[in-house]
Image (cartoon, rainbow, N blue to C red; front, side, top):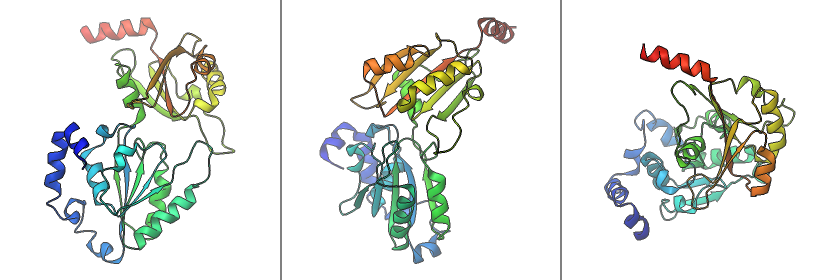
Length: 288
């Protein structure tokens, strides 16, 4: 850990100093059950790097990064996160923009599997949480097909970071009792997202990968029953130094985002509260 990082996070520096006294194998879970597999090949850890800021990494994520022989990392990974890699670790940028295909998923699968079969401890470092629109299932299936042990290390997802930045809760007792995480980017040929199934009254809808299709998202939300006055927050680069925020409505969504010049990476938070009379009845029941 660099002196600059140690000065910024002294407790983390103390933890890492202690972990340096341990062999790498002692910080990997289920090491005994995996002993025979490790003798034949390495392992793969799908690690969530969180929304961006390096100090939002979990301690387990840092441990896996420090123990890795090879790290395959996404486009949105903060360079400060990569400073936790040990000297000599192989760093491979496999970033993809929305719609890009320089690193198609099949190529990523093949590369991480080949590295693990060569005996390396592989970290597949993903922004946010690996299990939320991170295509983790495809990488797990590729590893399972070759008998490679896989671990998932959860990360803080962008919806949580964005709402925290707004100083708001994703849910609200009596008004918002449902949280929906959805993507606006489907596979080619798949039907468009069904917003009517996502945005019932009493819902916060956290919409990922939506900035390039805002007119379609806006039309879909209105068709699903959202009013033009339904509030929408857009948070770009949540938790980073270059974070930007925009508060608008469903009716002004595409126009206001375009005027503000906000683009990817960003998350939309659409808040459709319960009708006022329903909230009032719920409050009466809770105080009865």
